[in-house]
Figure 1 (cartoon, rainbow, N blue to C red):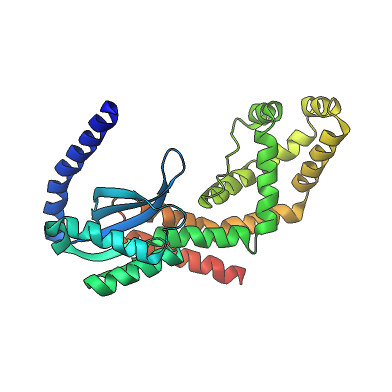
Figure 2 (figure 1 turned 90 degrees about the horizontal axis):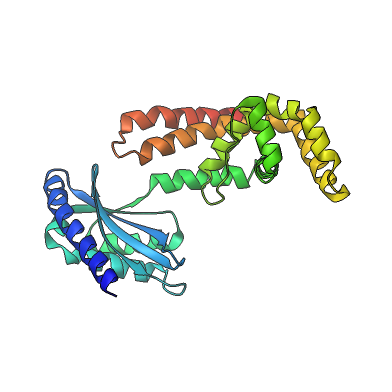
Length: 278
């Protein structure tokens, strides 16, 4: 309990010091309230609120929403509560940003009407959902095969080590809820294509495969068929061609000093890539 009190006091004092710098920036440029969903260390669903102005970012607090409270009304009530908690920052706030979940979009819409703010859908979330749409839509079969190769290599240390010995490059991991990782992992897989094909004719790999049970050897052969499939590699290349500009735009948007002139060319490249696909 004592430690919790000390940590809580430290957080409050840090926020208070940060508030002065935030207010100074906000009085020049205005500021935006930001809300997003998070999880704490025991996976409770949280709604986190913050204020942002340019590169200045000030966390305001978090609420344990629970499974029954994550709706538009709850979000709007908490949002207005934090907005009113600091009259100086409230006076400089002109917009409210949230992710693309329906409850969140409806919630910031309610706040915008009551408090005369501009509701904005977070472009980083929108891009992430776009990448998810590609990975789970038209390219689902291709991405699933790529993930099966990645999991097969990473899940077997001897194969992973042998591939590293051959090419001196690691195979990237996929994080299911971050679909940009599907793109970066697929790009690395394309880069490792010659090494993966070479692995299948490697004597050490063949010896390792020969001592496996029939069931495991059947799993090996399933992955080998994917690696030897030319259509799979062509489809994976197309997926990367279309998706990479989206990942580049996401990286630019997530930078502290993101600028419109940096992002616009990437948006154009993304549109060109989609046009070619269609």
